Length: 137
Image (spheres, rainbow, N blue to C red):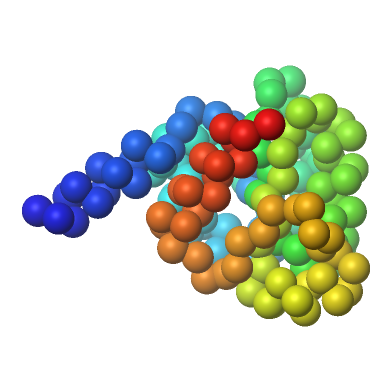
């Protein structure tokens, strides 16, 4: 019974907003997409920065949050976020990485004021982080 209440609480942390998810690892992209859909979000996925740009150009609706991997082959997540956020004003960004925050920061990709979640993350960690970001500011 406790598990059922826990699932209901997680679902209550979800929302209806649109999230653009950019991840070059197919298994992580699929798992995270399903997690976000379970929470009720409208999820648009891209497996690389080029695909993300195409999605943003086609989509006329608001994108509330960009969730992007930090380290990708074509372009780092920071550069991607900067360019996409110029196209979609008001969009917020959550960076994710399997590398430690210190390692990523040492490469100049992350700075203090950005939001970051460490992979692997739990369903609850992701749900809480997203709601905090969308509901503030």
